Amino acid sequence: MGLRPAEQREQARQLTARLGAEGVLNVALTWVDNAGITRVKAIPAQRLENAVHRGVGMSPVFDVFTSDDAITESAHLGGPDGDLRLHPDLDRLTTLAAQPGWAWAPADRYDQLGLPHLACQRQFARRMTEKAAAAGLDLRMGFETEWVVTRAPDPRRPHHTTAPDDGSTPAAGSTPAAGLLDYPCTGPAYGMTRLVELSDYLRDVTEALTLQGVDVLQIHPEYAQGQFEVTTTPGDPVRAADDVVLVRETIRAVSARHGLRATFAPTVVAGQVGNGCHLHLSLHREGSSLHRAAGAEWGLAPDAHAFLAGVLADLPALLAIGCPSPASYLRLQPSRWAGVYQCWGVENREAALRLITGAPDDPDGGHAEVKTFDAAANPYLVVGSVIAAGLHGIETGTPLPAPETGDPGVLGVRERARRGIVRLPATLTEAADRFEKSAPLHEALGKVLHGAILAVRRAEEEHFAESEAEEIAAATRGRW
Image 1 (tube, rainbow, N blue to C red):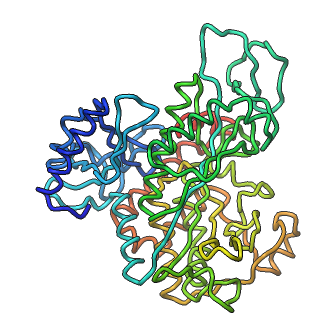
Image 2 (image 1 turned 45 degrees about the horizontal axis):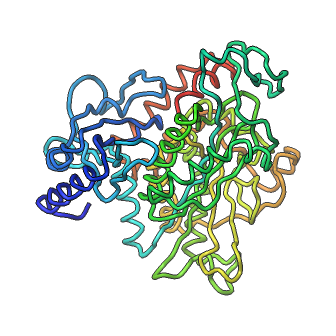
Image 3 (image 1 turned 180 degrees about the vertical axis):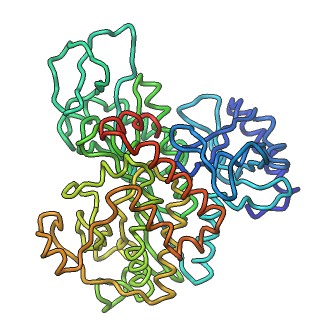
């Protein structure tokens, strides 16, 4: 956070006065656990200075919570013992536009001696960002956030249009059966009809994000029924992770005020297109884009070339970070633009790693997109792990293979083998196995955080081992 303790306390006093003038009574302090759930402790606004000075207590056991709130354990974490302190990052303190009387700040976690908690995901992201900066690299990252919106149950409205899990639409006025989703819009994918039907809602989402200092680039209907997407301006990796947490919770709050529910779960309805949370990234050195190297193949300077090669090479292990739920693998299906094959391509939306060239006259237009990830992921783990894999690529001089065009899913097995196109892990078990063996990720995360992540993944595997796809979707769609 950069300030000395006395300066932090003075900053907290000034911010408390500002919050009081804005009518803010409470501050939500959030962190994201290894199952991708945003956890919270809230304090009265008048306690902000004390929270900065002493922190807010919470148990380290949350590092081994699973998505259904069960508790597992690792070699270093688990059980009722111990305590940590949540310290709000005052530079990100934000008055919440859709939650009157509330503000929000992401928290860093320390032990009772004031030392960084070894499993703090946000500080891991910061360490990796600083490591890249020490190598002269300025990374900019941003997320696409996809979500599905449904009507919240209303006992006063017993008859309404519902959509069954197979995606068909029954007659208007039909009575919903158990397990059916009630969508508030019926327009086609990417259609203006869907935007018109929910124009007030989407306007309020945009307004709330803008008032909170989040710059919206695009907001539009997506493919699946009731699905939308918002894209925000890229920035520093830690800020990008903070932003995606703020975006999700803002959408959730606006939805509630409209009598709706938002879900960011990877799979909402089994067999249908799910929600992704694609990561966009670009590399810069001394103010110049490394995606605009004159005369370089694909425009990539050597470090950008090797960085992206490192990400691609470790993508099977990165799936355990970016696709952390069994529900994630219901979404990862060929020919659905989810990027299920370990390949890259120039403007290829079926490649796991897509190189986006951007406008020729835009020096910052070039960047890359990792398409496989979803919103069940902890965004701090995502940005930190991708940086770790990319830096390993630079350190080892990893080369990019030839780019792929078209959809690998329509190729025969022999043709994919000839081209060296490999299917990414199709289950969480496969991804966790690759994660366990990834030396770059183990070194970057450290044994405490790495072990906690792996323990949570194994627990999720075991919990859903006997579940059918429909059961997994139903059990997880309300968790994120």
